[in-house]
Length: 333
Ligand code: GA4
View 1: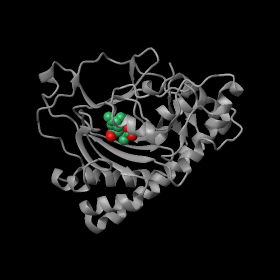
View 2 (view 1 turned 45 degrees about the vertical axis):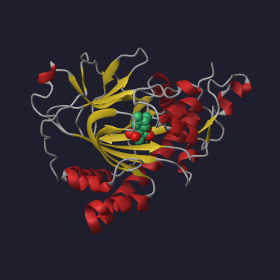
View 3 (view 1 turned 180 degrees about the horizontal axis):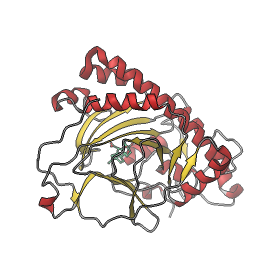
C-alpha cells in the first residue's frame, strides 16, 4: 500500500469561508431489492439529484486494486506524473481544472473509455507495468458500467417508461462518450488555512456534471458536499463500501427538469488525503438530448429546453467556468 505524502507549502488561492454544515440524510438505494430501488431512485433524483448505492455488485477486489494503482500513480514525482500528458482531453492535471481558469487543491488523471488510448498515456509513465494498470482499470470500469446500466434501467422502470433500456442504451452504446476520473486531494500543509482565518480550502469547486449520471467511489475521507434545493450546502459522510450517484445535466433535460442535476463540490482537509474515482456516463456524441416523449405527458407538455446533441452540449460546457449554470443557454424562454 502506497502512502500519499503531504505537499509542501505554496501560494494557493482556492480558499473560501463557509458555515458548518448539517449532515443530510442521503437516500440509500439497495440494488439487491430492485422493486424498492426503482421508486427510491426516482424520488432521490427528484429531491436531491443524488443517492448512495449499496449492494452494488462491483467486486471489492476490483475497487481495492484500482485504489492501490491510483495511490501508486499519485505518489510518483510531479515530473513522472506529467509524462501522462495534459488533461486536454485526457491526462494528468494538477490544480488547474478545465480550460477557463478554475483551480482547486487537487491533482487528477482524466481517462477515456478507450483502454488502448489510456494504455498509451500510462505507458509513458509506467513503462511495461502500464499493462497491469490498464487491466485493473478495465475490470473496474466494466463493473461500474454494468452497475450504471442496472441503475438506469431501474430508473426507467420507476419513471414508467415502456422501453426500459432507453437511458441505459445511451451509455452502453460502443460509441458512448463516457469518461473516467481519478482525483487525489492531498492534505493541505499546516498553517495553510490558519493563514487564511481558518477558511475552507476548496478541493474541487462547485459544479454540476454535464453527463447523464456519474458514479463516484472514494476512500473514507470526507470532503464531498452537495447543494440542496434551498441552496444550502451539506456534507456527505464518506462511505468507502458504497457508490454515490449524481444526476447530470443531460438527465435533467431527458426528464424535462423532473430530475435535478446536483451541484456539488469537494473541500480539502489538512489531515487525510482523499482519493475518489468517478465514472461519468456520457451518450454518443451524435445523441440527441431532449425530453423523453413519454415524460412529456403524451405530448401535452412542452420541452423546457432547446434541441441539442451531446457534442453541442459538451463543446459548450467545456467553454464555461466550473460554477456556471451550463444549461441556461439551452433553456426555452
Ligand atoms: C465536470 C465533470 C467531469 O469531471 C468533467 C469536468 C471538466 C474538466 O475537468 O475538464 C469540466 C467540468 C466537468 C464542467 C465544465 C468544464 C468541463 C471543467 C470545466 C470547467 C471531466 C466534465 O466532463 O465536465
